[in-house]
Amino acid sequence: MNAKISIQQVQKSFRVRRNLVDSNDQKKPLLALGEITLDVKPGEFMVIVGPSGCGKSTLLDLLAGLTRPSSGQILLDGQLITGPNLDRGIVFQQYALFPWKTALANVEFGLQTKGVPRKERRDIAQSFIQLVGLSGCENRYPHELSGGMKQRIAIARSLAYDPEVLLMDEPFAALDVQTRETLQSELLRIWEATKKTIIFITHGIEEAVYLGQRVAVMSSRPGRIKDVIEIPFDKCTKGEDVRTHPAFIRLRHQIWDLLKDEVERAQAQERGDTLQSSR
Ligand SMILES: Nc1ncnc2c1ncn2[C@@H]1O[C@H](COP(=O)(O)OP(=O)(O)OP(=O)(O)O)[C@@H](O)[C@H]1O
Image (cartoon, rainbow, N blue to C red; front, side, top):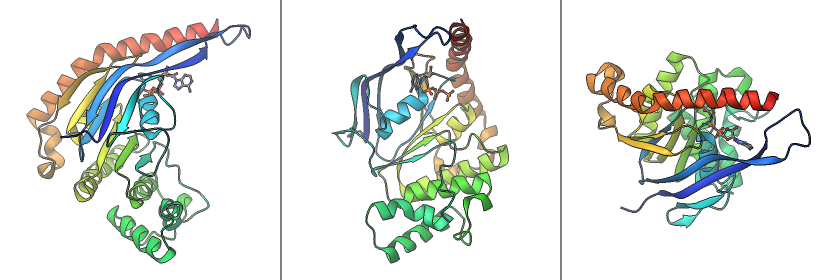
């Protein structure tokens, strides 16, 4: 089967000043992403997990078209990604809603950009607000919504303009445990209903095993794909207690075994970066 998204030998480096004190210090390249090659199938739920600073957000920005690879390429349905487009919806950790717009107007926003007529816009937005379980909250402003509700609206907004792919960068990281778990199962339900291809980035191993059909484990910087683990659960039968299932626990351990050296290396890198920049 053809890949929905094909990441081909992608590298990304940034030019950074290592020494903050010395203004004459020349900028040097920092390789954030090593060579990444990964195919994501149509309708697949792919989770990318990795230690802090390994380049997860850098990879997501590349997929979103917000930045360009230093080398390699990313294809969507065989077409080169050259910039942002409504074929990809993005949900960030911080809700990124317009504070001066109501929930309904926030969800309508992408549709307006797409040129959908006003009445149709309203109907579509309302149906997605219903899909994320927030009917009745259409006229509330973001400050009148809880963190979980804001994130639901952000998801509804991304889905409303019918993107091919949903890119999610630690969307539940700022939420409390109960809200996070509720939204995780909601997201699976929404994924079942919409059949979108999802690329979901997280630090959380449990979240990765719970949500993903496959989990790509990244190495510490420069981020590479260390391994890709199949999660052989049928998503439809995933109930709340799946987290205590022996197979679930085994997969969690398997991923942690792959990650723990990377986490230590990433922490050592962070200490090194802090030392260098304070010199
Ligand atoms: N615009 C930039 N300019 C310079 N360096 C950058 C830039 N963006 C990211 N980096 C560096 O690239 C590396 C990867 O950063 P990135 O934010 O992608 O990691 P991450 O895995 O998402 O981290 P976290 O899990 O902590 O959010 C880091 O060392 C970061 O400092």
